Image (cartoon, rainbow, N blue to C red):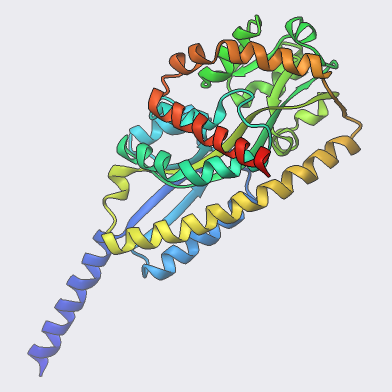
Length: 336
């Protein structure tokens, strides 16, 4: 009896040790502030994953930029200090250039066009990202970016006399400003508020939610009421780290976080509408370009689209597919 009990203890010890060795913790960093809807939902997802995998997989989050900006976080992922990140798509252009397809300047006219194209292409872009070593657990709407400034901007001529910020990791934004005959001032996202405070820049483009979260609204006075480009976030996990998770647990992680990111995606639209109202309540004026000025912006971009797409490293095949989907949707709208 004693021998049997000893064997049982030995087996239990070996079993618990195997569980401990097999446990995987995914350390995930993001600029999203703690307490934000993004963080609330991702933490809920992490708790569900830990419970459903009996502790074999856990997610540890580092919010609010404590691990650095997006470029720093991606470098730490390469060094295996982190396993994941929730970042804007532009941060991943060096990993998979086609992730920027939705970010082309003045590409989408409205949210309905975004929804149609995303329903056709999200899964393909996720596969492409995974082939480059990043497992995308979901894409979440961040919203349209608008030009926000200290002076009213209604025309391209007015834009050219300003000091405009461009994200230092976003080739499309930099190229777009250059196409407008503007010399952009590249800065990391964390330095934009300082740039607005010091006068280094007086134009920044971002979503209404982002302007509030990053405190830009305290320095800007005007928003040019023309959506310049569509922004979305990606929850990405290093594939080599993800492959350490047992196949059945990988399925759980994908299922739970896909649902979580979809909930964030759906909430974002409402948040941006509320953010627009909040900006207006702060006294920020939304100025509308004249039809002629809007056409000038669009024509200038259209004339240089091919160069944009080459410089950004976008695949000709996927770019053509994107434009075909847009054309199909617009033709359907005209037919109705």
